[in-house]
Structure formats: structure tokens, C-alpha cells
Image (cartoon, rainbow, N blue to C red; front, side, top):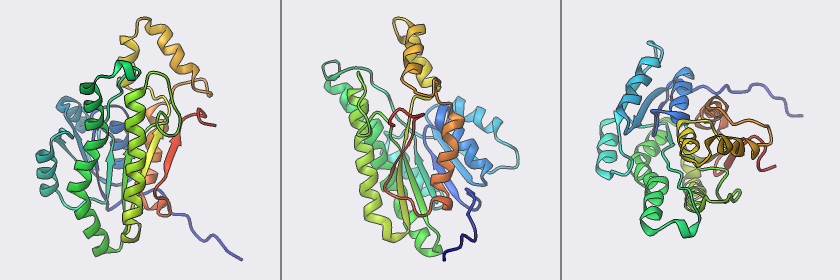
Length: 262
């Protein structure tokens, strides 16, 4: 008979976690949630004003550092990796939603989406993974990478999300490859696949629609729960997947989509 003796809480105490696109939206909420879970957080973004306000919002007793970082700049990523202690967690959150079909997506738009949504993860992984692996081997504690994918990917197709869906499907493939390569070295890698989340990015797309009121109704209508997700619906899962509470989970595309893919 097997007895469940303990369940590890989703704690990040003693861990250093780096988050990209942390100035707003899911990245910002995740940075605050990781701080609340006890992590030392390195919050990065190209929006320095958002990072400054994040610093103001964080509890004074937490250990938060911020850094301007363009995830399309290999040299900047390598320089930051050299300046930081080894990470225990990495959340690749940066991304862009291109609107349109294949006929609306020229090569420049395709290249930008691939560069920001996928190649940026190549850059951060190559920069931070060696230190994460060495730290995992030194301490015997695991390390965790979380990559931002989407329900609009290989999980499910959506109209007018050609470049976005293709890049997020690539993220899932990238994630599974990293998980398979390093599972025996104490590193886990998972992909997060949110539904439609009420973020500044979404609000910008709604505002840019010909009929913003109808656009908002359409986004809500595709969510079976009848509402948009909030960042508070997503951030706890980020903490869980970066923490040792998820120590037996790797290589997964984890959906948090309000029932869209039932």
C-alpha cells in the first residue's frame, strides 16, 4: 500500500528565476507571483518604465532586480548571463501576435515573428542553460525552463493566426526537444499554453479592430467559461511549473485555456 506522506508546496525559496517580457501582462504577474513564492527574480523587458513600476509594486522585503533586455539581441543576452549567478528557473515569456492569414504575412512579418517568438528562446537557452545545468549538477536540485506557447499552436488552429500559430507550435517542439535532451541532467522544460488573457497586448489588438466592442465580444465568445482569463489565472501555474512541486513534469504543453480545447 502506498501512503502519501507529503505534498511539496509550490515554493521558489532559494531559487533565482529570470523572466522575459516582465514589464506587463503575464510576465509582470508572474514576476510578482514568483517573488511571493520566495524567489530571487530577475525581471527583464525592453520597457524600462514598466520595470520601474514593477520595482515600486514589489514588496520591499523581496529580492527583485530588473534589467533592460532585448531578447532579439544575442550579445545583450550573453552579457546578462555572464553578470548573473546561475539560474534555477527561466520563463521565456516574450512574444508577439501577428494578425492575419498566410496571404497577409509577408517574409518580413514572418521573420519578425519567428525571431521574437522562437529564436529569442534559442538565444536565452544557449546563454543560460550551461549555468543552469552546472548548478543542477552541483547541488542535486533540479532546474526548470518554461516557454510561452499558446492554445493557438499545434494544440488548436485559430483563424487569422498563421504566423502566431506556426511560431507557437515551434515553441512546443523546441520545448519537447530540450526536455528530451536534458531530462537525465536534472533539467525540466515545459510549455505554457494560455487561452485568451486580458492583457495590455490583447487590449491593444481590441482597440485596433474596426469595431472594438464587437472584437471584445468575439474574444469572450470563444471562451467556454464566458470570460477572458486574467493574469491571476495564469501566474500560479507559472510558479508551479518553475517549482519543485512539478518535479515529475517535463516536456509537456500545459493548457490553461478556460475549456477552449475540451
